[in-house]
Length: 544
Image 1 (cartoon, helix red, strand yellow):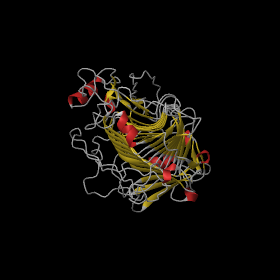
Image 2 (tube, one colour; image 1 turned 60 degrees about the horizontal axis):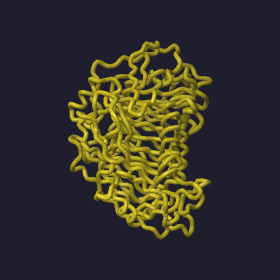
Image 3 (cartoon, rainbow, N blue to C red; image 1 turned 90 degrees about the vertical axis):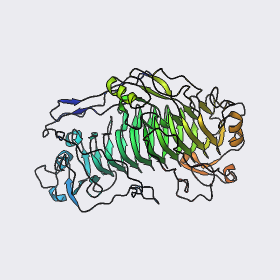
């Protein structure tokens, strides 16, 4: 669990900023992101005297940048200036205006996009087939302020898999940056972005091998969209969102991380995680919340680790830890997912506290506390509560002999937060936790529910007796067609054909922290394949 701002170096190698956070709460060590190799480059872009205000979420009634039917980000722009790049035959003294006048480096193409000014005309950087080494990539990408009509697009000219980048992309204060059909393949972090707005990664492959800490890491940013891509290879997380507001992770393969496949934490809000295949990870699949250094958070999202996160229609399989989890979340819904062969370390799903500490910037931590945030200026602990969490209409299928090590769920009991943290005492992980409509097949009747002090008999929404009544726990086997070959639909004769889902109520924001914007309740109208659900449909990512 690491909260890092990207290491910023000028192209002459002078250190400008290196804020490294160590979340001492869990005792994890921290190593800085791997720096790209130094090379002869023009001087670094200098920060403008006055930066424009941060991009704000759309006002009520503003058109969404996401198409309602496809769920994908809509690119809508005027005429673009083309800059062609060819790593084999290009020349950085050429015009770049056509394929036969291609530049050689992405660095030169990026340099030709005006910096520190709002663009009035967009740019498309077209990468001809070939391998682009770190020497051909920008050392640091910053201060390109595109708009919806004038974006900056970096795209493989001949489609996915034809342009291979073997260095990372490290981006700061950039807007409307769209990465299309790229392959970033290296033993290290592939894409980091801080203070960015409207970033799209589509139909790309990002692989960090064994050297990445996070394959994709996004800090203090908004409107981040990751679509139809293959993302994996990390010793920590394949996708790490810290203080990211509005966006989605949709239709991707997210896999092969030693810790979590993905999480959204640090006060992240309004994120949809839909239609992904999440697999082969250690600590867990996807978690809403987790733990964050207080100084990396942004007002007004200074209390919970995550707000308004919808996790729907995903297939999550072969994770050693919990397939899904909520660690310090407010208004979180996890619904219509299929979980398969998960939880061999302990349990299948978890609802526990989030962590909060201060990673050294005590002045900012104190300011956030004065603004009403929950936290302290020391190492902190695990005490951020959950509130209004729904886990509904999912399938958890561990076919014999595969079982979780100990229990179905992990639900933490109440805990006392540090004095002066501002967090409610006791801090509860099961405040308005609702678990219903799920089909669970995991071990036998002796398998523990795993509630302990959480979901106690006195809990009005999730006592053990309520959960056993509202879910099919080891009573219906939800057989799937051919999961070993990636066919996750229910098989003929599966109990899922006759088991119907239950209605999910809309989110209420009546008791949200002051200033936190309301997020619309997600739609559950279609399954992972796009097939319409009749009424409330059936549990799991696919309709029978």
